[in-house]
Image 1 (spheres, rainbow over the protein chains, first blue to last red):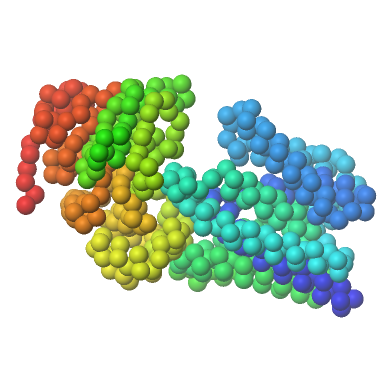
Image 2 (image 1 turned 90 degrees about the vertical axis):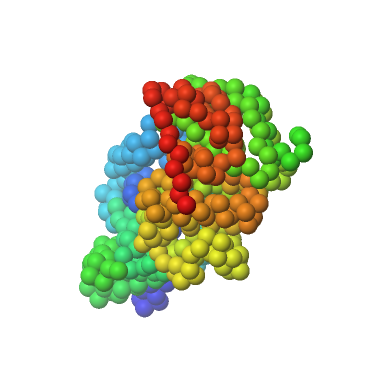
Length: 254
Length: 229
């Protein structure tokens, strides 16, 4: 039982840290709600994975790839803004998810469940979190420049489409890992709140990105501890811990 | 390309979203020249700069001296202040070494302690200097400048002119400058290109007469030269 909790805690720390880091980049691109939307896109995949006894992250990732592909395809076909297309795909996924996922599994898919994390899954979560961290670390300066100005980035010879593609894949992988911990409904918060809090507290990029990582880790750590103490669902506790940090940052804002 | 010519443009045509923005432009820029590009709003000035940078599709010929390094100062960067970033970090995005950054700060007349400052906290004059400095990192031979004076007060404008003049001397830069500001044309420019989709004139500033200007902007435009010294 203790080792089970340790697995949850370790997975949470790795996933929370990577999610915070990625979130710090998403916030500079005004993509705060993309993680949220993609969380919903993951729902049918998670449901199917639960039905067939597979890992939810695996199912989620497949459906996320499908969702991103559809958004990309629609974008070619129409001139509607990206957020509209994301909106269409995510509500459609949500609807499909509700239809195909049976009720007990649905709750788990929506809010996550860290109490069943195995040793293997802990290992996989840690490895993928580190991988995502490294990829984001590599594209970070280029993405920041592109977020400041596409033209400026292009004039520096940065291939924006390629960077964006890597970036989207990282977001998909991150969401797929995150849904395991806090579920499809709350995964957006896992990515965004630490970055928002860190933004309030930092005066440069280094502080900001590092702060996002630390806050992501602390939220998952204390949230999981609260879960252990109270027996309430872990996902909401993690997000509320994160929100509490955010509220504190409003007071300390510089 | 002829000797001393850094840029040669022939029959340049740019179409965006089905609309013809630039029509049959042809001109040359020699090393060390300051070419100002004048024209009313919507004349295609920014499009011309972006096309020269290779950011937009075009028909015709744009020929730069091979392997030339170009620095670009865009018109506005509305999103940069949303990102918590220090001035020093902004320069690191371009992989500028500390030594180079230091030299550039000398050039643009800003103190080193500004490196720690948040970009969002800079005055608009400081910010504009930072942008010039940023464009100067990695030692470009050519600077492309889009409306450098937008949103800067008169004192700030004067100091950015002086900066450009100084840089031109120090670094033997070739400068292409989009501007509305005629005083900069008379003070700094060696050549000017009047643009309103088509090229209306290409001349030295002295020949930029009131008739030419009213042809360019429409209506009566007189420019009274005044001395800044």
